[in-house]
Length: 338
Image (cartoon, rainbow, N blue to C red; front, side, top):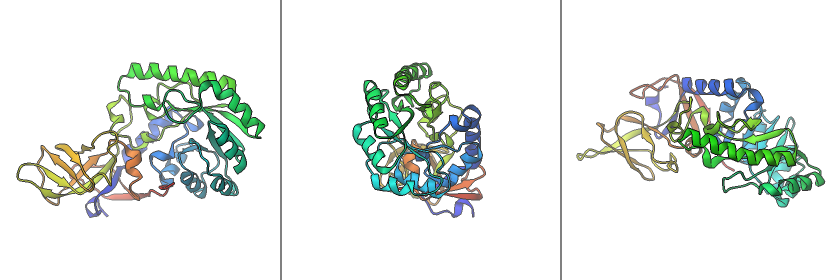
């Protein structure tokens, strides 16, 4: 099969870039110093490539991701880096062999759920500046005491400086990350445990406080991350087909909002031209020369929600001009859903 045979819209990925990105991260964050975040790519087959690179602990955002990783034999140390109130599914997971699950908690309620589900280990989730989950730093010690009284072991703390991930100013991103991590380190001194978990692709080199980095997007990279001075390259492409061409100069592609995410901005064209706008099933492009039936590639600005819209990623040895490469493998996106 070649990419020219694939029905569009569809995701294709450059395997050389994928392997290079994995290698680059593993050289700086080897073994357990990286806890790859499954939410970025939602594929157990891709996760196995990270195991081959030396990473055996993983971070999940949903219970569905936990379930899939356990079923695929990669459940020996999973972190649900998200609060949950789903007691039943956690209980069912813990009945399976070789399953070690740690859950993030930030309240008495989430602690009670973890204890009721039979979870044995938790991280206290600390708000370090992103207005999302996480307790106030001054409440960390109290919650740790509550967790221990409930029979839970505290492995450490977690804090996500997500508001800093895409700051294009390297110095400011570094300085602000250090400030956020000072909050997390202070909370850790109160809470205890061996783990300080946090960070992501955008702070992979400037977050020196965490004992494990929760990066995931680096494997195929976001278009938005490509604006930063990072050593990872964009390796994902939405393959589309020109289905209409206007005499006034624009063309229409058969992939739009239902096949890629624009929360971080419009996609970029792989080759010539500019994106005018995306609609449900279409993307309108201009400032180029296209013909009906031609294949056109779009670089997503945010790969995580883009991948979640698809069932497969087609691997090619290298994405080439003309977008007609041999398909050397297919990755199942088997961790979608909740």
